[in-house]
View 1 (cartoon, rainbow, N blue to C red):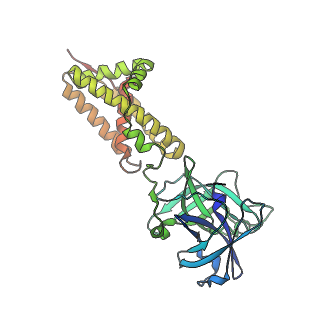
View 2: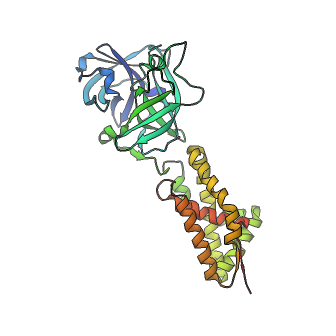
View 3: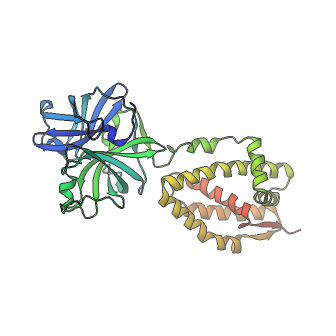
Length: 363
């Protein structure tokens, strides 16, 4: 059976009286367990003292996993990597992810101290990150808590250290780190410190930068997609007013039927592509999407009042459009990497199509 949920990579760890969790990592034909170093105690353990076990589901019998070697052990940074001999159900390999965005949903799964015989999945979101220390903080989503049965959260969460933290992109998992410790003795905020997969990246071939959202399904593909004439004609028919407004203003901006036609076609192609990518932004990074829309909303009245105008030449219209786009680009610098240019360009096209931004020629 093939699985790629967080719980299908979860393992239980016991060593010298300590208990914890870990995550199986598949690299071609080899298997590893990534976990928190303190699950083994303050000293590098002997291989023979480590017990790693896995369940095929939360009620199944435990299967022992033999440890071949301790590849990495760092108590101060609190991570460890073990090579293991795993024989069991078929598992999909997955990618390691870094430079992820705050407020992104993340899942983890481990063995709680209160019930160490059954794994338990949790949903959380990323609160903040530290690239310099290669760690991050997550918090349980609303409705989840470590406070149960009157017990302190730290006791309830005990055993979850070492649990693998995953981000999903369109059903594809990315391991971003493991749990280190619950923050505060009573875990009032349900916050957890984690270390990132940066510490073990050299052992794995797939180490993906998630900060620019390029791992979103079809992100790059949509930007480069070559829309057919049929798709563009369909857009013209269903969005007649938008197309006519855009085309009319391009005739002011770019005198000459041939260039106006070419620019309008290019803008429709870009608009269709970026519309899909903005929907992905809404789904995958909602806080960034909300900030983007708030900025756009604040601009609307100013665009209508200060940038819409009658022009005596196309150069004046082009300069005005460029000035507006540059301002918008600067206000969208919070977006990852160079995507701000794409979004400002998209927004200018939309404003031209809905007449928020309007140019007419002074004949």
